[in-house]
Length: 180
Ligand code: APR
Image (cartoon, rainbow, N blue to C red; front, side, top):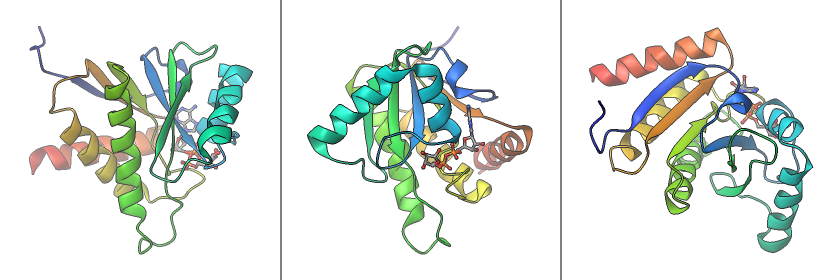
Protein backbone atom coordinates (compact mmCIF):
# COMPACT_ATOMS: atom_id res chain seq x y z
CA UNK A 1 0.00 0.00 0.00
CA UNK A 2 1.45 3.42 -0.81
CA UNK A 3 0.43 6.43 1.27
CA UNK A 4 -1.54 9.18 -0.45
CA UNK A 5 1.43 11.45 -0.87
CA UNK A 6 4.18 8.90 -1.36
CA UNK A 7 5.77 9.14 -4.80
CA UNK A 8 7.28 5.89 -6.05
CA UNK A 9 10.88 6.73 -7.07
CA UNK A 10 12.82 4.07 -8.95
CA UNK A 11 16.28 3.90 -10.52
CA UNK A 12 16.33 1.35 -13.32
CA UNK A 13 18.53 0.14 -16.19
CA UNK A 14 16.77 0.38 -19.54
CA UNK A 15 15.81 2.31 -22.62
CA UNK A 16 13.94 5.57 -21.97
CA UNK A 17 11.95 5.12 -25.21
CA UNK A 18 10.44 1.88 -23.90
CA UNK A 19 9.05 3.45 -20.72
CA UNK A 20 5.27 3.69 -20.40
CA UNK A 21 5.40 6.68 -18.05
CA UNK A 22 2.95 9.41 -18.98
CA UNK A 23 5.96 11.54 -20.02
CA UNK A 24 9.58 10.80 -20.76
CA UNK A 25 12.33 13.41 -20.74
CA UNK A 26 14.54 14.01 -23.76
CA UNK A 27 18.17 15.11 -23.39
CA UNK A 28 17.96 17.51 -26.31
CA UNK A 29 20.06 20.37 -27.67
CA UNK A 30 18.90 23.96 -27.95
CA UNK A 31 17.87 23.64 -31.60
CA UNK A 32 15.34 20.91 -30.68
CA UNK A 33 16.00 19.47 -34.14
CA UNK A 34 17.18 16.05 -32.90
CA UNK A 35 20.59 14.49 -32.50
CA UNK A 36 22.12 11.25 -31.26
CA UNK A 37 21.80 9.36 -27.97
CA UNK A 38 18.49 9.80 -26.17
CA UNK A 39 17.46 12.55 -28.62
CA UNK A 40 18.08 10.34 -31.64
CA UNK A 41 16.26 7.37 -30.10
CA UNK A 42 13.20 9.41 -29.15
CA UNK A 43 12.85 11.00 -32.59
CA UNK A 44 13.51 7.71 -34.37
CA UNK A 45 10.95 5.75 -32.36
CA UNK A 46 8.52 8.63 -31.77
CA UNK A 47 8.26 9.53 -35.43
CA UNK A 48 8.05 12.83 -37.34
CA UNK A 49 5.19 14.24 -35.24
CA UNK A 50 7.59 15.05 -32.41
CA UNK A 51 9.98 16.96 -34.68
CA UNK A 52 7.05 18.83 -36.25
CA UNK A 53 5.95 20.01 -32.80
CA UNK A 54 9.51 20.96 -31.90
CA UNK A 55 9.71 23.11 -35.04
CA UNK A 56 6.47 24.85 -34.04
CA UNK A 57 7.90 25.58 -30.60
CA UNK A 58 11.14 27.01 -32.02
CA UNK A 59 9.20 29.12 -34.54
CA UNK A 60 7.01 30.47 -31.75
CA UNK A 61 9.44 31.01 -28.88
CA UNK A 62 12.93 30.42 -30.26
CA UNK A 63 15.49 27.80 -29.27
CA UNK A 64 15.37 26.00 -25.91
CA UNK A 65 17.76 27.69 -23.47
CA UNK A 66 19.93 25.23 -21.50
CA UNK A 67 18.12 24.37 -18.27
CA UNK A 68 14.68 25.14 -19.71
CA UNK A 69 12.03 22.56 -20.67
CA UNK A 70 9.35 22.35 -23.36
CA UNK A 71 6.71 19.68 -24.07
CA UNK A 72 5.45 17.84 -27.14
CA UNK A 73 3.29 14.79 -27.67
CA UNK A 74 4.95 11.39 -27.55
CA UNK A 75 4.15 10.61 -31.20
CA UNK A 76 4.36 6.84 -31.63
CA UNK A 77 6.04 6.27 -28.25
CA UNK A 78 4.29 4.53 -25.33
CA UNK A 79 4.62 7.80 -23.41
CA UNK A 80 1.91 10.36 -24.14
CA UNK A 81 4.33 13.27 -23.83
CA UNK A 82 8.01 14.09 -24.29
CA UNK A 83 9.44 16.84 -22.14
CA UNK A 84 12.51 18.15 -23.93
CA UNK A 85 15.23 19.76 -21.87
CA UNK A 86 18.76 20.89 -22.64
CA UNK A 87 21.48 20.02 -20.17
CA UNK A 88 24.80 21.84 -19.83
CA UNK A 89 27.85 20.93 -21.87
CA UNK A 90 30.62 20.09 -19.39
CA UNK A 91 33.36 22.72 -19.60
CA UNK A 92 35.31 21.88 -16.47
CA UNK A 93 32.75 22.84 -13.83
CA UNK A 94 33.36 26.57 -13.52
CA UNK A 95 30.85 27.79 -16.11
CA UNK A 96 27.67 27.31 -14.09
CA UNK A 97 27.12 23.74 -15.32
CA UNK A 98 25.76 22.51 -11.97
CA UNK A 99 23.10 25.23 -11.88
CA UNK A 100 21.99 24.52 -15.44
CA UNK A 101 21.76 20.78 -14.77
CA UNK A 102 19.75 21.41 -11.61
CA UNK A 103 17.45 23.72 -13.55
CA UNK A 104 16.96 21.11 -16.26
CA UNK A 105 15.68 18.50 -13.79
CA UNK A 106 13.69 21.04 -11.81
CA UNK A 107 11.99 22.59 -14.87
CA UNK A 108 11.01 19.18 -16.24
CA UNK A 109 9.37 18.33 -12.90
CA UNK A 110 7.62 21.71 -12.76
CA UNK A 111 6.35 21.44 -16.34
CA UNK A 112 5.02 17.94 -15.60
CA UNK A 113 3.20 19.30 -12.54
CA UNK A 114 1.79 22.17 -14.57
CA UNK A 115 0.47 19.75 -17.19
CA UNK A 116 -0.92 17.40 -14.52
CA UNK A 117 1.44 14.61 -15.63
CA UNK A 118 1.67 12.06 -12.79
CA UNK A 119 4.43 9.74 -13.97
CA UNK A 120 7.75 10.83 -15.44
CA UNK A 121 10.92 9.06 -16.61
CA UNK A 122 14.30 10.81 -16.82
CA UNK A 123 17.47 9.78 -18.63
CA UNK A 124 20.81 10.79 -17.17
CA UNK A 125 20.94 14.30 -18.65
CA UNK A 126 24.28 15.60 -19.97
CA UNK A 127 26.30 12.46 -19.16
CA UNK A 128 26.73 11.32 -22.77
CA UNK A 129 27.73 13.66 -25.59
CA UNK A 130 27.80 16.56 -23.11
CA UNK A 131 30.46 14.80 -21.04
CA UNK A 132 29.19 15.71 -17.57
CA UNK A 133 31.09 13.63 -14.96
CA UNK A 134 28.75 10.85 -13.89
CA UNK A 135 29.17 11.15 -10.11
CA UNK A 136 28.58 14.92 -10.13
CA UNK A 137 25.58 14.59 -12.46
CA UNK A 138 24.05 11.79 -10.38
CA UNK A 139 24.34 13.86 -7.20
CA UNK A 140 22.53 16.80 -8.80
CA UNK A 141 19.88 14.66 -10.47
CA UNK A 142 19.04 12.74 -7.30
CA UNK A 143 19.07 15.76 -4.98
CA UNK A 144 16.81 17.74 -7.31
CA UNK A 145 14.34 14.92 -7.94
CA UNK A 146 14.13 13.83 -4.28
CA UNK A 147 13.58 17.40 -3.07
CA UNK A 148 10.81 17.95 -5.61
CA UNK A 149 8.84 14.74 -5.13
CA UNK A 150 8.48 15.42 -1.41
CA UNK A 151 5.66 17.75 -2.47
CA UNK A 152 2.60 15.67 -3.40
CA UNK A 153 1.69 15.24 -7.05
CA UNK A 154 3.56 12.44 -8.81
CA UNK A 155 2.62 8.76 -8.54
CA UNK A 156 5.96 7.65 -10.00
CA UNK A 157 9.26 9.19 -11.08
CA UNK A 158 11.94 7.00 -12.70
CA UNK A 159 15.58 7.47 -13.58
CA UNK A 160 16.38 5.23 -16.57
CA UNK A 161 20.10 4.42 -17.04
CA UNK A 162 21.34 2.93 -20.27
CA UNK A 163 24.20 0.76 -19.05
CA UNK A 164 25.41 -1.08 -15.98
CA UNK A 165 28.30 1.30 -15.25
CA UNK A 166 26.25 4.47 -14.98
CA UNK A 167 23.41 2.59 -13.26
CA UNK A 168 25.86 1.62 -10.51
CA UNK A 169 27.01 5.21 -10.14
CA UNK A 170 23.43 6.36 -9.61
CA UNK A 171 22.60 3.58 -7.15
CA UNK A 172 25.81 4.19 -5.17
CA UNK A 173 25.12 7.94 -5.15
CA UNK A 174 21.55 7.35 -4.01
CA UNK A 175 22.79 5.18 -1.13
CA UNK A 176 25.28 7.89 -0.15
CA UNK A 177 22.60 10.62 -0.20
CA UNK A 178 20.14 8.45 1.74
CA UNK A 179 22.74 7.91 4.49
CA UNK A 180 23.37 11.65 4.90
N1 APR B 1 17.68 5.38 -23.03
C1 APR B 1 18.22 5.83 -21.86
N2 APR B 1 19.42 6.43 -21.78
C2 APR B 1 20.11 6.57 -22.94
C3 APR B 1 19.61 6.14 -24.19
C4 APR B 1 18.34 5.52 -24.20
N3 APR B 1 17.78 5.08 -25.34
N4 APR B 1 20.56 6.45 -25.15
C5 APR B 1 21.58 7.04 -24.51
N5 APR B 1 21.33 7.11 -23.19
C6 APR B 1 22.16 7.65 -22.11
C7 APR B 1 23.61 7.88 -22.42
O1 APR B 1 24.33 6.67 -22.23
C8 APR B 1 23.95 8.93 -21.37
O2 APR B 1 24.22 8.31 -20.13
O3 APR B 1 21.65 8.94 -21.82
C9 APR B 1 22.67 9.74 -21.23
C10 APR B 1 22.70 11.09 -21.95
O4 APR B 1 23.43 10.95 -23.14
P1 APR B 1 23.07 11.79 -24.48
O5 APR B 1 21.86 11.20 -25.09
O6 APR B 1 24.32 11.84 -25.29
O7 APR B 1 22.68 13.23 -23.96
P2 APR B 1 23.59 14.44 -23.44
O8 APR B 1 24.85 13.99 -22.85
O9 APR B 1 22.63 15.27 -22.63
O10 APR B 1 23.96 15.22 -24.79
C11 APR B 1 22.93 15.87 -25.49
O11 APR B 1 23.54 14.83 -27.54
O12 APR B 1 22.09 13.53 -28.73
C12 APR B 1 22.63 14.79 -28.65
O13 APR B 1 20.96 16.23 -29.55
C13 APR B 1 21.59 15.83 -28.36
O14 APR B 1 23.12 17.61 -28.73
C14 APR B 1 22.44 16.89 -27.73
C15 APR B 1 23.43 16.09 -26.91
